[in-house]
Image 1 (cartoon, rainbow, N blue to C red):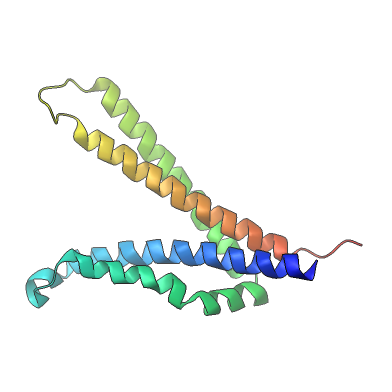
Image 2 (image 1 turned 60 degrees about the horizontal axis):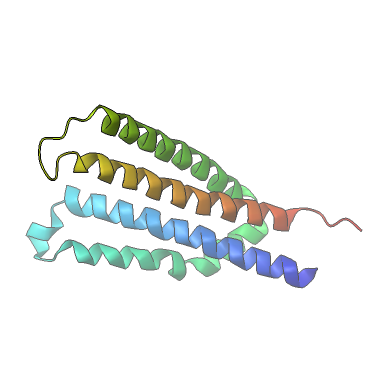
Length: 145
């Protein structure tokens, strides 16, 4: 049972680290565009991909915080629920826009496809966050004998 708990803790920490990496990428990209660092530093947006290393770099810290307190799993569940709701809303909005769209060229309506894909990506990240939070909370549950 102890081995299953350890595997569950590390798996939940890895899933939450993946969510941290995704959020770090979005945050760095928004800061990169907002501060116009591409013009100031002369680098392209590819430098933002370094933010994907944030989760794996912090996995030990994330694992220890999961093992000590329940705030990170609860935050992961809340974030997953919010992000999942926003993603589902985005998908529904894109489906509605595609249904009303009148094509006028070969790439007409492609913005709706990108909106739908962005919503799907948000739902997938939300699923990872919820799964990580559920696994972490399951590891904290008292053992029944």
